[in-house]
Structures are given as structure tokens and as C-alpha cells.
Image (cartoon, rainbow, N blue to C red; front, side, top):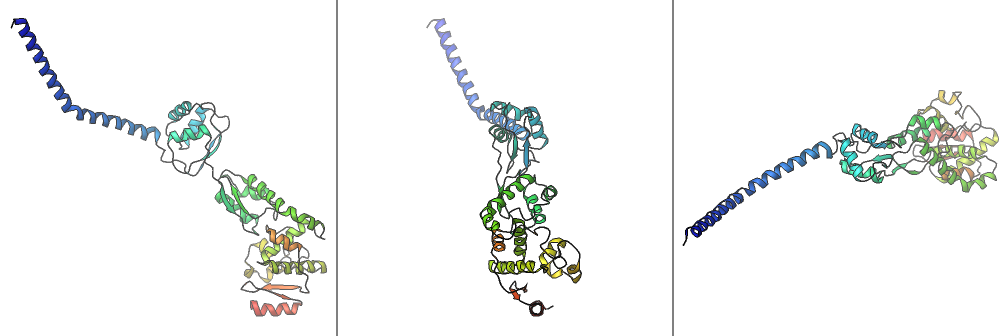
Length: 344
């Protein structure tokens, strides 16, 4: 074998051995390198998530987040950052731009039921996913505006009880008690409009009957508001309506405790002789006629009962401690019933 061929064979053999050694070393360190790369990449992702992606600790869960109409993307991102909605205004703007909505974010009120990542926030504002779920609020029959106001304020973040009472000063009796569904961003105006509209809708079928009666709508509403407080069933309410309309026709004072309670806030059992003699507008012992305004917001049943009184010879009534109503034709009979059923 000539020297050149021998040299080439040795060179190729040496190259083959070197390649085998390098391959063995690479394989031996592959898992170590893979683990290192995985750790570095994972750490970067964790830092990125903690720094800019995850929800802030003070995320306003269940609160209204407002995006003003006409605000710039920079202003919106800054507001969201200050309100604890996103961790990074820059990342939020980048994602909105990626979604193609940098000039068209949907303005309005948003509500998030749980903390959301910046991806979810950017998407929600880009598509107008407001997350507002109607809140069910029930107003019981006979409730006064003073009783309604804190119920709405407790459920609706944008509702102000004081403003509601100021705006409804002459509306007692005309805000229909019902079950309502309001969005969380509803205001006093929204509530008032809905309740007045409901009243008009409910009363509309009764208007022909009211027109053919001898009473005005305001008188019917005022009478119904008293009936709502005085009895719990239609039979008693209609009978009491007959008594009260009759007393008005005779020029007698109505002597209804619930009108005093509306004014002074006392319980029926807490009324005193001094209360019964007080010279106040809602004292139907001291003043003849209907009280100045309704004393609550009556149900449709009570409105109908005020229109359909049962005519009797009774002039007096009282409810015992079990809520049972007892009737009398004379004052002497009434005094006897007070001793029997009330112990007075």
C-alpha cells in the first residue's frame, strides 16, 4: 500500500473516531442543556406574566369600570392602570392595536365578575363585551319612597338615594311596586322612568272605571295607599274602602292610624294620645278628608279595591293582634271591640 493511501485511511479513521466521541459527548449533555433552556424560558414567561399579564391585586371585581366616550387610547390605558384593571398600559395598548381597535374601543360601563388578564381586558373593550348582568330588585306593595331608596342604593352602584328622594318629592303613590331588572349602571333617572311607566301601564285599564266614578285618580291612589296598610286581603280592603268613602261623604274624620305612622315613623302599637291629637297634615284624627298625599305606593289589587268598595252600614273597624278585622256600626261597639281584642 503506498504511503498516500495509508495516510488517507488513517486520517479517515481518526475523523470517524473524533465524530463518534463528539456525538457521544453531545448526547450526554443534551438533557442538561434542554433543562437549562426550559428553566430560562419558563422564568422569562413567569416574570412576564407576573409583571404585565396577570390581574393586579386590587382588581375591581364586581365594580363598574368606565371607558369615557371619545377618550384616547393613551388616556384609557392610563385610567385602567390607575383603577387597578391592568398592570401595564403599554401591553394593553399593544394588544388593542393587535386586535385592530386602537381607534375604536367601545366606550361605556364594564363589569368583570372575576379578575381578568390584560388579554381578556383588551379583548372585552375591543368587542364591547360589557359584562353587565341585570339585577333583580323587588319592591313590595305599599313601600314608600323612603323605603325604596336604600334598597336601590344597595343594589345599584350609580344610584343615589338622596337624589332619588329629591326627584320624587311629588311622586309618592305613583311609583309602581313590582319586580324590576336593572343593569348595574342604572341611575335614579332610569329607576324613576321605569317605575312611572309601569304605574301608567298598570293603571291604564282602570282609567275608564275611574272616569265613571265620583273620584279622581289622585283620590283613588291615596285611598288605595291606605287600604294597602290597613288590610291584607281583598275582602277586608273593599269593606274598609266602603267605610272610609262613607265617612268622607258624612264629613267624619277618617281616623286611620297608618297615615300617622307614615308621618312619624312609629309602629302602630307605639302611637300615643298625644300623637292622635297632634296638629299635623297626616293626622286623620285631627283633620277631615284624605291625607295630603298617598302614604305609600299601592298594588294594583288595592287600586282596584278602592274602586270597588263594599257598601255596608259599618262606620268603624279595627284589626286584632292576629290581623283579623272586626267591624262596628257604632262608636260604642268600637270601644267594646278595643277592650276585647286590643285590651285597651
